[in-house]
Image (tube, rainbow, N blue to C red; front, side, top):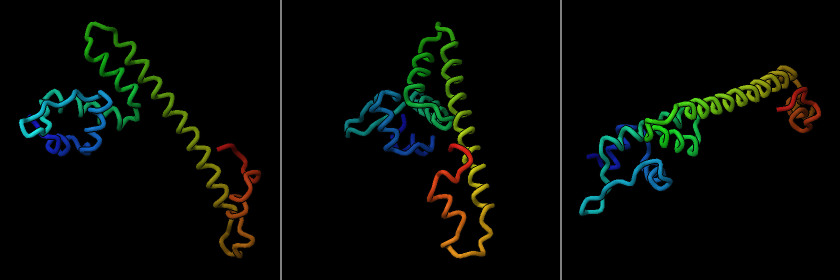
Length: 138
């Protein structure tokens, strides 16, 4: 059995986050000692590792809940897990597209200023003051 502090150290998940995961139902409520301290078993440790990895990959709480539900029903098809992962991949690709557009615009703005003039004539400041100077949506 693991205390919440031990669980935190072994997984790298902060104690308040562990409590939150328990509160929203991602992590099964821990048993309690007579002193009312939480105690987690090996399954709790493994579940928290699963949650941490899924969060690191950007999955939402809702997606993780669905994945955990699927994991608890081994007779079900893994198609749902594939669809959830494909949705996450589409979200990541959209974020990358937006970040690439942002990078392009920032490079253009930065390159437009030689840094020799006064701030009154600064291309960076002028560009930031008026979105019409931008060449792309970002």
